Image (cartoon, rainbow, N blue to C red; front, side, top):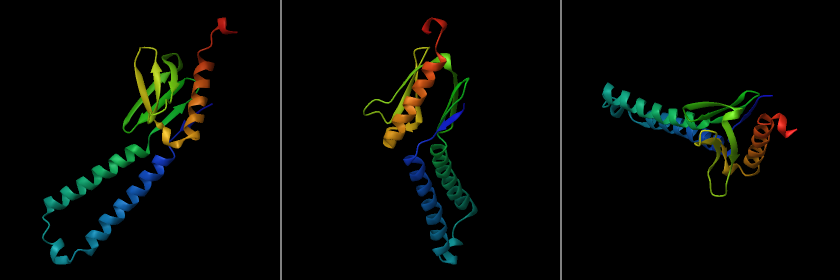
Length: 146
């Protein structure tokens, strides 16, 4: 059964920041007198729009973080990087005190953070770690375990 985990507090904060940013840019541009707006060259206008777009893209990347689990494994989306792991590749997941995000330890000796499971979400994050840990255990069972 597939399940997707997303941060709660961070998504709300990012959505609010994005809305405030868009509103501020629109209000400030409209509030400028026409003669001041006319002083901006097309290169300056494009530059301002590109800076605005980069800020919104960064916020979108933070908003879209997720961990998706299914019968084949899990997929981690951290900002703009998506990684997929089969269950045998994942050894454990942890969210230690002081860590901002959950960390997955992998069979190849490396680890990867799961930004979607954030310590700031408290009990929700702890529940997600327990769920994923249970799934790791279920999918790593062998005949010797029974």
